[in-house]
Length: 111
Length: 115
Image (cartoon, rainbow over all chains, first blue to last red; front, side):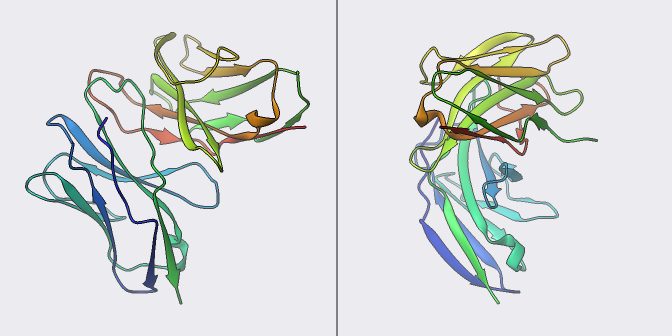
């Protein structure tokens, strides 16, 4: 699986958009970009994933660059409950159930 | 639809004992993966099961084992517990385990403390 690089921490004001970047320059053609978040050592929560097109769901938007070497997770209106560790993961092919987690980005949403 | 459930949620054991953790996947999901999370090593993949067969395994000693039943429920066992086995153990299930990665959904975890 391709390796990802994320900033260790980010801050965001409540009500503003949170834009979390991720670099995955070694991503291969059949690998997806997944985003999860983890709050207070609960189980990671699935947010969104994509292959090459931008994706949006009720939680967030995922913007993937045309060369697929980086992506941005956008939380459009951050709330205090969005404070969490956000993980960007690249996975696909014959991963057979293995997700490789990095250190993630600690997002802190301030009032 | 109910999510992934794990039992027990908390467990305290002493060194040298063994422990069995249980995971019930989302209904219809056939793949179950296990992860260990510690402050020092982060989230690490243990193994994955599909159709009662282990298809993938992480870099953990043989003291860590697992199995999957015909109803897709899974158990993991850790024998001869060590202090370093204290961790949050997470289980995740996915709908179809084919050649391409499917979205995994995680349970709340079992927190194991080894004294």
